[in-house]
Length: 252
Ligand code: 4AZ
Image (cartoon, rainbow, N blue to C red):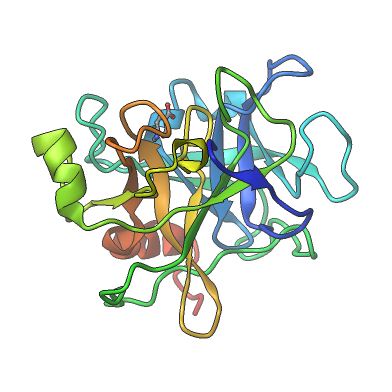
């Protein structure tokens, strides 16, 4: 996260991180991810370059180099990469992670581990730019990796702002465009390398945080001419339903 600031412990309890089992101490997570219920996380497809068995998910984390009271490291049962994901265009850059455990009972929630809400089917953000927040442990400037979870406010932008910069590669039905339009470069908030897979949450009507985007790609970080690109979660609700219910058809 560039142009952001330190989060408070426990403020973003759905924030998870993805690591390789073999990663050494003191290193950085490969990607972010978002807990959407007790057994499933949503992340970016491009995070998976190896077999699912080689990764672990960390929940309840805040400081990557300190043992936090609520942090847990969990193995993955399997990963469902969106079948139309293209590693050339990065379209459909979404993947679901299934944790190990009985359906509905993989992790127990606590003040530091909880699920983000998904958008209501058919919901649309109004004309006014929603207040949205991105969070992660990704690069925060000049190759510097923060150790505490950072956050930044980023408004959603009209899709033409990304079309203009990225052309055909930006597909507005499956992607969201977000970034601050402020001319103050010191505070130009954006996601960056290592944040991808993590959440863009927007505050809905009742003050509820809704998982609206998955951090995906962009040209550089924090350049006001090049907004960040996010997978549009509302577009993937049918797929999420289908995959996450597949092992528990009697639920709900
Ligand atoms: C990345 O490399 C990345 N500024 C993620 C987000 C953005 C750029 C790069 C958007 O994972």
